Length: 214
Image (tube, rainbow, N blue to C red; front, side, top):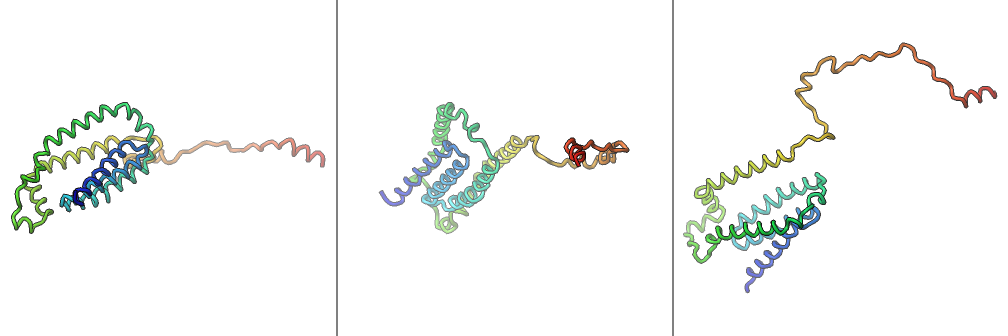
């Protein structure tokens, strides 16, 4: 076993362990940190596969931006983990079965494209262009429509997430510009009738006794 193979197994083992801890950690903050660890090991595996652009993009985009933003949001929302995890172990067998079925379907579809022995050899001009430029040419020529469909799905997911989390809270304070524009003089000024004279409050009994003794 050479060094690259050994590193591949090490990174894969850490990746599987971190992925398992993402769904089993009791704290959402710990789950986000384990997800960062999983992304970092996936980037290391891509680096071993000589996919430098994907590796750096995973570190910069997902770990450096998306996961940090997600971590800040989780820390500010103050989510009750007990309510989120309620019924987790009861649905775990069904979730594992669905996950295994999805993994088998993905393997059946993608295994045909990972046969390294049947991969075509690149020409000298293609080798000089580099992986990043070749990847961009391949995506925006042969896989343009799948890329657009993925972008639309991400946009729908963003809109759905905003719609699910956007709810009216009783304890939140906000301003309604339309109501401010329609305001009238009677809404700002209110005249209250008061008595013209004010009654003098009665003196306490202790003061009366003190004055009488003097």
